[in-house]
Image 1: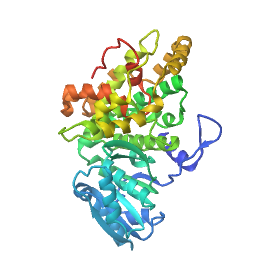
Image 2 (image 1 turned 135 degrees about the horizontal axis):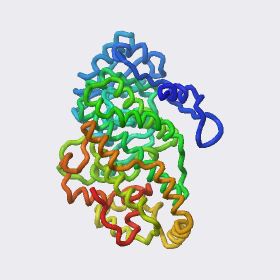
Image 3 (image 1 turned 90 degrees about the horizontal axis):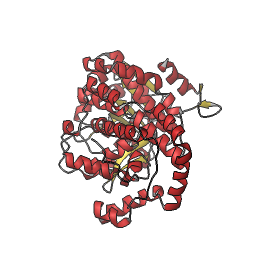
Length: 431
């Protein structure tokens, strides 16, 4: 059924649950299968990439799939330049500018990798106004099919508007051979759906921000199957892998449908982004490993808020000076400008509290419907071997508490972190 849903979405025959008409995505070429590296030329030639291609990879992804893709493309009559980035490239503007400089003669870019390689290549393609395609090497994140790229710019982790790939190719045989930490990271990223949807719906109910059901409809059936098959992912089960890969594809498409990362990135991602920005000398960890931990934190916080019989918010002590004291002058100003749109002044708070006085019971019921208990998320994460505590990814407890307390300050996205901060006497968030 979910494979059918993906086919119908691509074909434009899937009804939109948010209104009349059919859902549509500009990304029409998504192939989930086996042996795709050897078929690279046949897969890529119909795409509007031109004949001179730059294949972007790092030493690990070159070994996993990149060399096969480059050889197949060359054998298919295409001109190929191999661009080998350093191992574990950091997705920042320096890396993006480097890829642009090294691929100036290419008519199109082909990323072979997962999170960082995809984001760097995607944003380089966007800035240089060229098409790109991606061959994934690990089921580690949901960005293959999204229109945004996670890039660090001037010290601030941002979700930047970028370019959709013209083709996404995900080889299940390559995916099951990926290091298990990457598999567990992708599972961790997928488990953010309940916390992200709860946060996004909460912002819609309290602030009137836009909200859509469509991205979650795409995920509903596969999420239950994925949770049930979590343990099978540890054994290299290709059926379980197909469900995970499709879930990540659908999550990315949900972001594309919404024109931003709202349905997949809320409070749990703010905490992870803060750690990326402010963490010094933290051990290497994958994005999805951090998201597994921060998702549990947000799920527990949401449960505590949703257990309350009533809810009222109070003013917070957010000022430009406070931001500068936390982040320093330059980054503090940048964060303050990003934060200001969601600042709750007295008039805005009075209006929100008036609505809460009348409608909190019905709001609470809607939020509980989309929420998933933290105990269920924790059990699924443990079954797949993903981390569930900050200590498992070597994050010092004091720094994690700092990240949870301050993560709401880095963006204008209103989440349960903002609700907790506006509740006098609400105990600190539990890790």
